[in-house]
Amino acid sequence: METCLINEQRPCNLEEIRDVRLLMQKVLKQELPDPTEIQHMMLCFSELATNIARHSQPAATELGIKLSRSREGWKILISDNGGSWHSQHVPDLQPEDMDATGGRGLSLISHYVDDQSYRPGSPNYTELLWRHKQNTQPAKSVLLVEDDPSQQRLLQAYLKDDYRVLIANDGTHALQLLEQHHVDLILSDVNMPGMNGLTLRDRLNKQTNHKLIPFIFITHRDRSDDTCSLGIDDLLPKPVTKKQLLITIQRVLNRSEQICACMSEHLNQTISAALQPSMPGRISGWRIAYGARSAGSGGGDFVLTEYHPSGMVLMLVDILGHSIESKFFSYAYAGYLRGILSQSQLGNTSSAKLQHQISAAAARDKILSQTLMTCCVCQLTDRGITLSCAGHPSPLRITPSELEPLDCQGPLPGLLPDACFEEATVTLSKGERLAIYTDGIFESGGTAQRRKNLETVMRTALSDTLSLDIEDAINQCMNSFDRHAGSKADDDATLILIEKAS
Image (cartoon, rainbow, N blue to C red; front, side):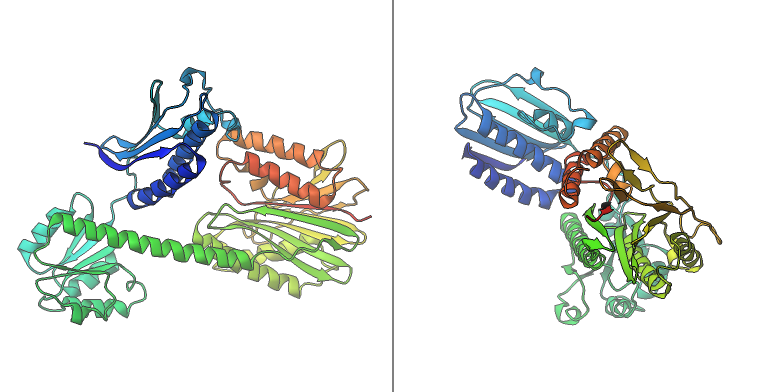
């Protein structure tokens, strides 16, 4: 059975296409949990409809758009009264050519849909299909707190196909199960012998680790006056139907996930803003340019700078990991490193010795030892540049003839109790530059072929921009990164260019 969600007939112009796209996106957000899947569907619809509007010969004047859902998957059907084209002429999209969306963009569409068909005629019909993805996530768990055995059996029968169900006979039993099992939602009766539902909810409100678990009361009579101050998510009157129960639970879980996602994103943005560097354009006879791209929540790159009488110390750090917890570690590490910099005798402490201090701190600290990072320490003085890396990509000396990696490597900070680090000293000539970067600059892009392609592009960009002003060079390099790292890079990427001031 197929359910039609959108069925529109519109004039074929870009304004109407944008309007339908917004409508389609709004509908899909209510139906699909995966934002990436929605993004791919919107991209394919926009690319196809826009190209029909722009390139049909003779020009299309009418578009029909239908979005539907079936047991097979999601389907977008577009009809148009313009000129037809031959689908066999559409080339396959190669991984290294993901950015090559010229022409009619049909190769890009082929990459993102599971199946497509095209029937030329009056009108032409194009059908795009995304099959339902197999759910590989473990079922969410519901704690059912109910003393009546018949109600237990009924509600468990309603839930068992979609959720992992734990059963407690009263509030005391529920608290015991919460200490032993992860629970995604609590569904509780109000009136029970022993600890009733109201007392259970009140107890949970006083427990930091359990108070935010979504909570639904189910009861024989209206208890809104009793429950309004307890911070529950919903109240269902008995008898409850299976459809009503499942819809309510899914809505409450979706709302809880949305709140968590919003909080995580706000936290991510706040921490990311706090870690943005204050990068000078010129220091101690050196010019510096900085470019960065963020892959989103989690870990990430940050830069610290500290000035001393003879110059500046610059640290480029990459915290490994992509979770919001990794973002906390970024903030914690930044505080540690600022403390080390402020206490060091800058200008008299070598880059290798600073790396040793950082590694020792990471090894003995219980929080910092739970994550991994890479670090490049760069000291700029009027005499030259000294560099030391800890698990970090080797800096590159850029000359008119080559990109020379500098040998200044050491282990990841914190891995060894008394690690030793190499140090390199660089004196750049006029017309040469130093590139310090995180691995995302060369290794974003998903597949091995795309990473290889990105590295070739970025190395070429670093060489080709050597004759440009350093600010123009960093902008051109980062523009090249944006074009070849994919629609969304899968790792943070930071690039710092340094050259001798005139």
